[in-house]
Image (cartoon, rainbow, N blue to C red):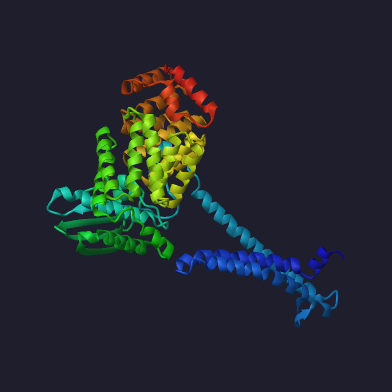
Length: 531
């Protein structure tokens, strides 16, 4: 008799299969209930290792012993063929089959459920523009701008700064996605319809608050609302010195996160406490810079550059201020508002490297480095930095936006669309969301979905009508659809916005790692009248 036949005769194979099926179910149940019951995060791994270590003992035990009507007996003591042994074998058949079917059923349900929330389709963009698209099964949270109750209206930026920093703290928690500042800050005044805000931003939880500052004293109130039920999940107020503002931010973000998440572990709490600066003067300059950068205008970027420079001079270790300086500089290059693009890109790359050296775990620094690398032609390092950025902060839309751009330049159109839609979902309102259509229009063009590409280009121009590349993308997709006159009109509009427009300029800005894509783009643009 062969060894395998002997294993089957002694029921070792059946017992082993039953053990593996039961073990898989135990591990699945453990992984599911661990966060719900606030059990240690390492528990599922311990259960897995116990199962692995126990397997050989179970196999050896089933070889030596067998369950008979008289109880456990050594296999050598049983008479063959034994009616009791045959009964035991049949029972093992039923148990093993039942466990295997249960495992298959659970696995199938899990896979089916995952597919219900799977990758976004191209038609999803065309209809929704990224809004209302689920990030995943977790509810999102949006922090609205805090009301300024101070007597000085100029202190509004201080209230905005508190809310902005709260967004930064909360986005460090990986337990839930956080909507970006530039989207949630569209709703001001304290009288916003929360149901409308929730629907527009795709956020179930809304944070509202107010700041009253009188001299060196500050009072902060905040409340967390479940917009689906209008229930106040949490509310509190804080009084203190202005110098204690950072401690207040940590306390508020921790309280909100605790109200939403059961499984808050020490490592995540430490990540959430990381901040760019403890220098209040630098922080003030930084917040004022954000207000200017949010305008996405030539004047706004110029003001923002000066303020971010002052912030970095006030605190030379403020990595995020340097990262924002890189963003401003490169935006001016992309939008055609810079007279020395080559020099600016080189300087921006140096600044981005300095930012990462100051704090390698700053997602803004990594995102800035990724964008600067790709603008300088180093696609591989650009992708690496961009992926580090989204790993460090999965709720940072800029990180996803530049990953989308870098994937597009690398020739991965599908990956670019997925990352771009993620950026829009995190930041569904405003200029930043519309700029993502830049990537989406080109990505759809690369994939041959010209209607979606044309729609994306038009959405881009609706927000930024003077963005000359938006007209270029209209032309690219229009040519492919046979609308040559529309394409030539688009190129004429692009030249009006940027008189120096040429194929060489487009190639320098949007050239990709795949020469055949560049050749195809240049060919359609020539049909549109661009040389």
